[in-house]
Length: 73
Image (cartoon, one colour):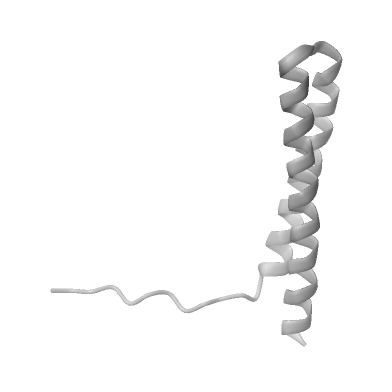
């Protein structure tokens, strides 16, 4: 049988990928906040909760960016 070798762990562009993920998440937060104007009740609560999780993700991404930047040096 012809087995594929796993790809080597290429972390050279992790910082850029993480920064892109942060930017996309910020844009998602902004779009969701804009939609709050047209939301009410349970839908509004769900949007606010999701944005809180997004903010937590951004904080985690930023910590990971710091770690990856240190690993590059």
